[in-house]
Each structure stands twice: as structure tokens, then as C-alpha cells.
Length: 220
Length: 294
Image (cartoon, rainbow over all chains, first blue to last red; front, side, top):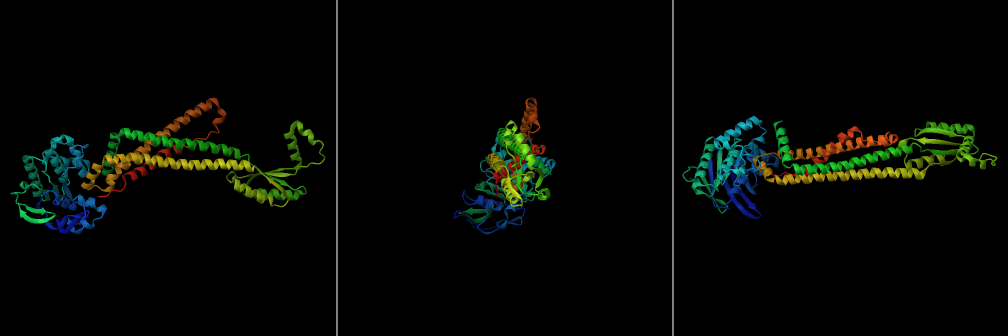
């Protein structure tokens, strides 16, 4: 589903990812671990094409990211659900509208949008907050809205960047359960985190990044 | 179709959210278009006056003293067959003298001592209206002067030249003003949409990351620009129409004779103004949104 082949990325001459080779299968759940600055976010950005590799090849869901044309990028992104570290929720739109946005770009019928949004809100247990605006939600609730938005269009790959970064342990546990549910439905899930507690005992593959390159692979 | 519903819904929500800036922009655009309409009306009326004056313009062709009746007839036929000439009027020596006497009135006694009529016979010719420009008339006069049995050709050279200058100045002024208004309206919309675009930068970035196409991001801004331009145009059209209706009513009351000669904007102009506003605003909005890069 995701193939990195000898990928290197520089920011202004400075190397941020060095010679990365990864292969992630369909419906696999993978953790990307490492300290801040190890290159986890950059690696995710390379997958959803917010950055392009300087060397090497990346194939995501059959799309060659390095040679992808500007006009084709939206269509790659529609196959991916992304849980951003900074949430990227629109403050002036309700929870419903924030999630619906991911479906509106698919030109779906409003009735279908409503049905799908409420279905995913039930999954993250936030149906009662549908008409609430993000600033009135707690951090955990906002994170669940972001996950709902990422999964509403039923993507083949779900990427999460530090999804429990600012959350307490109980909320983090619930969020991780959500990811496991999504994964059991057949979605490939890749979670970038510096929190070892998230993957310990998970039985999932963990790719450790250290000083901008792969240090080792373990099983959590 | 669903996507068009979204475009309009999104655009109108934003228009309502930013209603005060939009209102100011609409007013600015309508003032710009209003200035253009006022100048167009002024030009139309000036043109109407110039056309009225041009109707009296003629070239007088004086014939040689020794010309025979047959030669006069030949020249007249030549004029009548010329496609540039719409009217030919022959004035005999005798008629010329009568005209001078009429013009002089009581002073005509000074002519009593003249034994022989010194005035030549002549033709007064009128050219087509669209040919009444200084250079053409000058060329035509030179051409006539070269004809056999013609002693002199006269026309109001200075007068025609002034008339042409006024007309050309009005045309140039209209073109410059039209261009200036085009730039102004485009820039006003550009600034407004640019502000909206920056205010919604987070939304644009999120849409890009969610997989929105460029048109999905761009179209609501274009719809907003289009709406602003159309509303500015409609406001301008309504103001011109009301002002014109009011003015003609007042003029009919005080100076009924002038009313018929007043030039008015054609009804199609009232549609063309909002269309022009829409086009200018659309261009401004398109430039404001700029290139969207992922």
C-alpha cells in the first residue's frame, strides 16, 4: 500500500530523511516512533504529497508520488485520511460541517453526506456535538472530530501525526481504540508518535527513526 | 450539480459573514460605473449636438465665368453620380445676387451702381455624414478644385477641424476613462477578494489537504466577486435610470423643446452595466485568488 524506496529529503541543504526504505501492506497498522525532529512528520508529509522526495521513489496506493502532477494530487489525497498534529479544524464551521467538508469535495448528495457524517460521529461518540463549534470542544473531543473527518470518506490509508500529543492517558487510550477499530475494517493505519506507551503491547510493527534515518524495526 | 449548490451556498454564507466589506465594495464599484455612465451620457449628448451641427455643413464649388450651360450640366451630373455626395444644389449668378441682396437687406442699395453681376454661379454640395472629417473633406476639396471649369472651392475648414477635435477628444476621453474605470473596479474587487482569501487561508490549506481540487477552492471566491460586480452594476443602472427619469421629467416641465433632442442611454445599456461590472469583478477575483499550489 505504501512503498518507500531509498528516499532522501533535504530542507535547505539540511538532511531530514536519509535513505528510507519501507514497505507497508494493505490493512496493516504501523507505528512510526522517534524523538521530535527525527523526521516523522516529514515522512507523513511525503505520503500525502505536501512534500516531494529529493531522491528515491514513493508509491502510495498505486500513485508514484515523485512524478505526480499538481492537478492529480487532490485525487491521491482523497484516498488518504490524515489526522493532523494541529487538528486543522475550521473554527467558524460546526463539527458537522468540518466533517462534511471531506465529503463535499467528492460531490456527494447532501442526504448521503448527512447520513455518513452522523454515522462516523456515532463511531467517535460525538453525535450530540454535531452542531457545536470546535472552540467549544475539549482537546480529546477535537481530536475525535479530526479522526472522524479523516475516516468519513472511507480512505484506504489513515495517517495520524502525534494523535495523542496533548491528551490525558484515558483519552489517549480511547483514541487508540478508535484507530484499532478503523484498522480492523481494512484501512491501513500509520501513526507517528514519540510516546512509546502508545505502541507497547499493541503487536503492531514499529519503525524507529533516529537522526533522520531508520534505526530499527520492532514489534510493539 | 450538487457541487454548484455548494459553491453558491459557500459563497453566499461568506458574503453575508463579510456583509459590511461587501457593501462598501459594491458601493465603490457602483460609483465607478456611475462615473462611466455619466460620461457615456455626456458623450452621447455631445455627439448628438455635433451631428446636428454637421447637418448644415456644405462645400461651395464656384464655377468659371466663361462656363457654358452644357458644362454646368455635366458638372452637376458628375456630382449627382458621386456616391460620397448626398445633395447637390445649383445656384445661378442671378440667384447668387438675389441672395446677397437678401442678406444685405437695406444696405443692398450699394449694389445698385454695379452694372454687371460679378458673382459666379456655384454648386452647394453636401457630403455623407460619416465622411465629415477634416482630412477627407480637404482631400475632396482638392479633388474638386482640379476639375475643369471650377474656379474655387470653399468650406468651413476651421469649423470642421474644431468639430472633429471635439469629437476625437470625447472619444479619447471615453476610452481613457473606460480603461481607468476597468482598472479601478478590477482592483477594488481584487483587494476585497484578496482580503477574504487571506482571512480564509486556513480553510484553503485544509481544503487542499483534504483533496479539494483547485476549482473547488477557487469557484466560491469567483462567485463572491461576480456577485459584488453584478450588484455594483445593478445599483449603478438603477441610479442612472432614476436620475435620468427624474431629469427628463423636470426638463419636460421647464424646457419641453429640449427634451426631444436629449440623447438617452439605450435600454440594453442598463443590462450591459451589470454585465460589465460582473466581468471586471470576475477578472479581479481571479487574479486575487491566484495560482493554487499543493
